[in-house]
Image 1 (cartoon, rainbow, N blue to C red):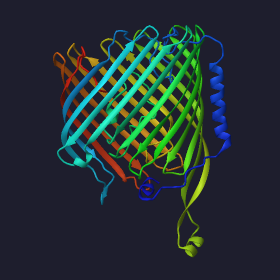
Image 2: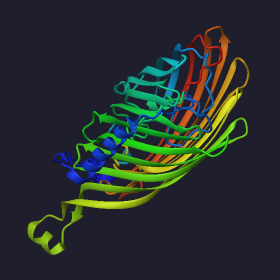
Image 3: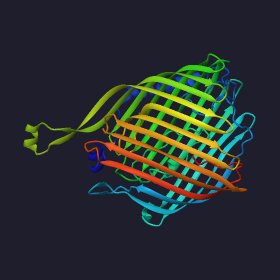
Image 4: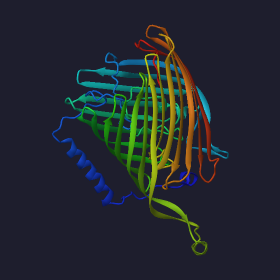
Length: 470
């Protein structure tokens, strides 16, 4: 349970996994993928670069077949904010539960963002960093750093490659790394944005995709990658993950694409005995609705194999003899679960709207491990005038533990922001964010926290329109 896990010495023998069978499956998948990539066929460009076009495909990431603005430049920014954060939580408790507090301070921010396009290549970059200094609770002073890079290249008329890397560090559960939204569409596999406590964690990941056009209407993609999340506090779990994916898409009309996919993932946890292997299949449809709207739907099933260690109650008769009421056992379990996703987006020169909902399997948040994860988020950005930009965002997530540590964790939040260009290269920004987090284990009141963040500041950037940091 969550409450029990936090109070125990959970350093266990390193997991040896279940050995051959599942690792052989993964090796066969990798070899099959490599073999497919060597077939002497001319393949499709990726994300529309090779001419496939059509609506975006759920699960492939990146951008839709609609071309981005080829003239967009890479731009830097730097700024300073006055901030107030409530619900700051270090890993300490009082008689009423988790100890939280509020503090005012100053935050220095900076970054680089944008896209550079060549004839056959495209580079995207999104870097954000900050340093916070509070007037009180200086132990929570610290820095957040987030870097995401994406490179795409058209190899032939039919083949394209895309690779992405991301890395970062943060000591904030709310208002830190989670505020740096990858608005340029850069995939961030393993990005940790659902932590419970303000404790330092470092992460990194990489992913590569090869896309191939079988015909003007049919495409194949093969992708693979990995990530790692390390948490400095020994009370929390880290994770190392690997993933592989293959899909076949068919454009049945100018506005509609359908397809099938196969996904493999594995999670290996640090400071815990146990691992998880996933094998999933799904089908999807993506449709462009008029000039500005796109809709994507996916439904599938996933087989979750989990090996781990858990607490069990000892028979009362035995417990009376040995004086111990609980013990540990190694378990292996298989769950067959549904998965799915829905995406609705609108993009125009005046603004953007997006809604995403999904059910998937997650490595958890460092407290609850392998979990069924439900996510819903919506965002709206509008350019009110040449000098004024408006952002609105909301999100919900819910973890349900699948055996390694049981219990649930849910988070709901949102925010609103304004950016106003008051002079050349100078913008004033104001933002308010709120998040509520709860857990339920043996004690439903074990963790129930509201966090708020207010910020007001000035940003200097050569951007032509007010910059959005969400």
